[in-house]
Length: 415
Image (cartoon, rainbow, N blue to C red):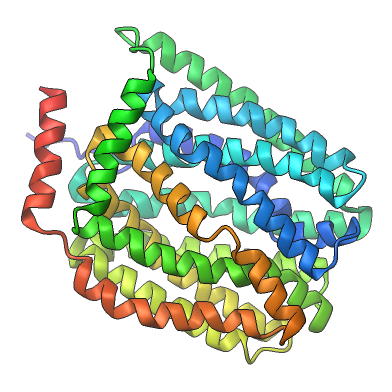
């Protein structure tokens, strides 16, 4: 008698990924071009850095809460709440008379991201078997990367020939349609629950934060994830928001070419995410993470030498290869060392704590650009990545008791 093979991705997960793709095409239409829109509305280089520094404050107010709320009321319900806020943010992008007014959009956008991102990661872990989790993360991210292939060229083309405001109108329409679908999914999920969920309380929030805080300071693998992520996040935020300004103002690339670079990144990531997940499952998470960050270091080195579209396309392809190796391994590792009931909180806490550390980074990067050299900010992520690679290799190997602790906690909840 033949046994039916269980598919890696369930129908529920495939439907969920379909809605994520629709929702995020709009964000990828303008993500790589937003610094140029801020500049078009009257901001100088230092003010662009200041804009993204101030804009980084908003996620800090929502990320832990969004992750915890995902644990408390359900993944799809939290996503629906964030999506409504994200839809409202597009009105600010469309009608803003100056760059300062765009900060309203960053607040609503931060709320959307903070509610959706932790739920997205946690939902995938709950819809996959542990022995195949790296592959499921890889396949899910590969599907998701469609948005990076489609969105940036559309955004670059519309903004180049019809202007930024029309680009945001198109993006807002797509996001609004996705929000409607998400609300329907959340409603269906709520109706399918056999028992009403317990109302979230501040006591539960404090308990979840205390449990996560204990993992962070315990000196185990969660501690080292937090520390190495913090170092890289600070240095990458010093440079990341300046990339479009560097390529357009100094190297002469157009909006369309910058949009295509994002697509190059997405294609490289999409092709290699599933192999990256396989590598994570078969050889362990730390190997994929080290190889991935090695690729990113190589990309930054090539970036500093590039002067035309072809050179930057090679850079973005290397970024994509690095992302494909890192993402499934990182998410699989976190899902194994953090208890199920804390996963949403964990993703939110990592983002918030690390974001707090890197808060002034965009402004510092802009100051280095103006006072010393436009190239100087881009050396920092290269050096930081090379420094953290040996630490990752030594410390990112879960101890047996860390994995057993997670298994026991999950068993106690399901038993």
